[in-house]
Length: 410
Image (cartoon, rainbow, N blue to C red; front, side):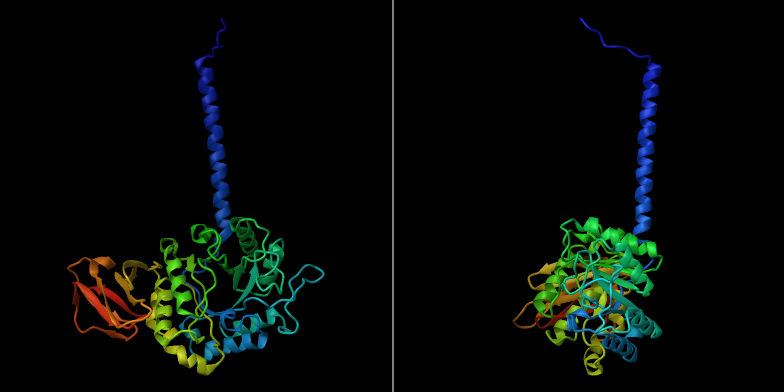
């Protein structure tokens, strides 16, 4: 009969202490590496409130050039929109030549950006604005008219920094099939390595739920596919984006895509709903119409230039509003803002029919049920003459909304 070898207790204790030390060392090394990784990824200090500005894609698609980018910067300033916070002038796809130069560098398209991107950046900066650029975490951009940055992340990041770029929209087309969580951090690290603060917009389309991992990689992340200038597209993007409301916070925002206000595909009421939803959702407010056209700008200035609605979007508390009740086509969206106040949107999203009444009760919103509340209508720019008890109601036609700021006063 065989017997098992025996060891002194002191030997066992020594072995246990050695294993514990190795595990602790490994855990500490992993934690240190993870902390260093987080620091290297997204400590750029940008996006403490959602970015505001303009992007070329929704209105112009590939029909862009340096003259119209400069004219857009001029339009933002002359219209007063820049003073309201619309400071990013973002060039989207189709700005580069189809091939890199002999050293592997991206080249601005000679026919449309003959002065180069750095000259455009200098012009935009001279107006007190910021310039954004576009690339892709794949071999080509989505238009397939210019190279993507996959495999060239450090070189392209250095190029963007040398041009004094302030914002990068980073798309997801024509990639190698690897996960976005593998490809996107490579560019983020490369941008951080340049030392230039560049806002990082992950245009990943909600492919791999970027709201769940984007905060350590970008300043905002697309939660949806591309928007189009229709009610159906816009409202569906708001619905998809709302699911991730709890993950938005200063420095990292859910992005349901750019604004379509002013492009002509929706009614006035629908555009008011659009702008209201983006504002309360703390979404980036990136205009998509022809800002250089003064007539077009005047036509929508009362919507995109509503300072009270903009202040909701830019509120420092940084909490994204959520749907708190859904009663058929009647919805209540609400969330806290600074100063012990609440934003509340009453939405009639019916497609057709008569006017309908939507009611928000205080306990739906998060206000004690017996409170007296001061009510500010931010589209009418009016405060109700008396404090309101219990609830607020509004009757409105289909595809329209009311937007209020509530402040408990008793």
